[in-house]
Amino acid sequence: MKKPDDSIGNTEPASPERTDLEHGGAEKATSEETGAQDSPKKKFPKAVLVAAISVAVLLSLGAGVAVLCSVGSEQRKALAEVRARVAAVTPGTEAGESRTIMLPGDIPMELVWCPAGSFMMGSPLGEEGREDDETQHEVRLTKGFWMAKKEVTQKQWESVTGKNPSHFKGADLPVESVSWDDVTAFCRKTGLQLPTEAQWEYACRAGSGTAYAWGVSLNGTEANCDGYSPCGTTTKGPVRQKTLRAGRYAPNAWGLLDMHGNVWEWCADRYGNYPSGSVVDPAGSSSGSSFIYRGGGWNSKARNCRSAQRNCRSSSSSSFILGFRPVLVP
Ligand SMILES: [Ca+2]
Image (cartoon, rainbow, N blue to C red; front, top):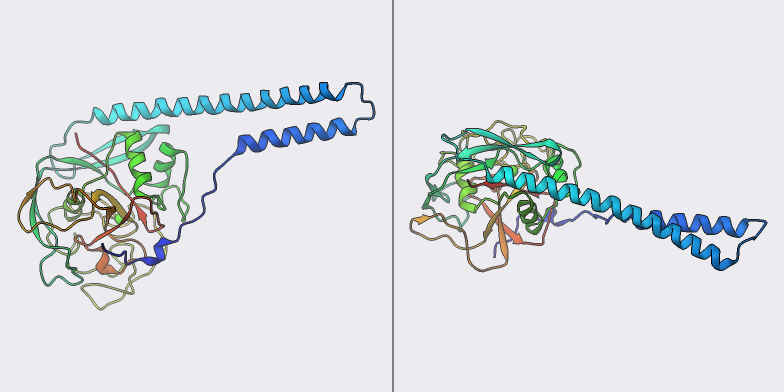
């Protein structure tokens, strides 16, 4: 199994569960009990007071549960509407065509059309930064697909899940600290899906055959990465040491943003060796416990942001270097 190069990213921020309802109920009970004990005239038997307090607490809890049920019901309805909209999306006609779907709360997610086609997956011998598991082979994708133009933002994540686990907080920053299990749950709720590794690289390259969609070098100027460790050049560039607003850098030829850098992106596939010959619609290894993620992140050396670079980890693992973007296959 490959080892993630960005060991710094294994730190997981704490994400305490909210229990507002239980805390509210407990505080109310304590306050009322205190008031009863301080009263100068104890006209009511203790049993009556205890019963009254119990009823009040139960009513309070009941009202809270009812509110939560109502909110949950509205969210389920909103997500069902999202799935219906997703299911109704039709194929595009040309690369780079864009379409927008609305998430709950009228939060938009822009998608870009990636047409069916063939490409050389992996890297050629001699590419700077190349690793042994990038055996170049021809891949044919028989179906076009819509891919999110940007990494999923925290605003989009919250509109679907109601939570935000991200380490770097900001509505328009990419969501991170999400596991493969988390992002597949997001996809189930919305009717979207994770790209296969082949779909991801095909979209990242957008017709290019070079190490990066724009050419052969990166030093942190063209994408958010560790510019002190450049690739294809000896000139060092900026180091941001954090995520940046999704979509801050120039798009690739099909209009996709941040395929290189900012946060790594989960794919659907299990990690496995590439075949040496041509394949059609590959979906990764049928066994194994490590799942692919691609593209490099804000703390990655530039060579690890190459189109062909592969990385993987277990489905329950999360990190502040790792997010995702979904696809929609009409
Ligand atoms: Ca990225």
